[in-house]
Structures are given as structure tokens and as C-alpha cells.
Length: 52
Image 1 (tube, rainbow, N blue to C red):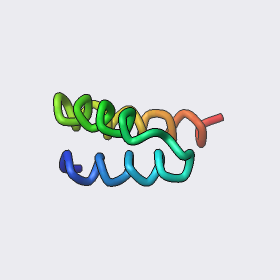
Image 2 (image 1 turned 90 degrees about the vertical axis):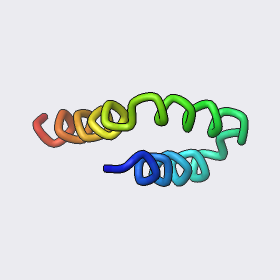
Image 3 (image 1 turned 30 degrees about the vertical axis):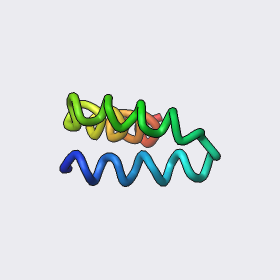
Image 4 (image 1 turned 180 degrees about the horizontal axis):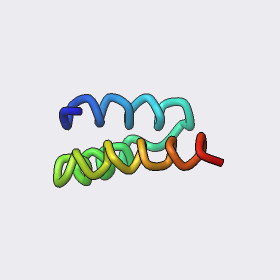
């Protein structure tokens, strides 16, 4: 996934939970540092869920 794809997912997640714009921007900055990590984090959580 590209950094932009991860950020799009993040924005949608935050919008559904009514997260402040400030926190969305902070999250995007973290994603920019290591987008593969954040994409993998999400997938790791999903895999853990379905393996239960």
C-alpha cells in the first residue's frame, strides 16, 4: 500500500469516529514516517481477529 492509500483509510476511520482534524493530521504525519508499518499493523490486527 502506498502512504496515500494508508492515509485514505486513516481519514475514513477517523471520520466515522468523529476524530478531530488535529489528531488526523498527527496520524498522517506518523503514517508518512513509515507507511508500510501502519499498513501492516492494520493487517496484523485483522489477521489476529480472524484467527481466533
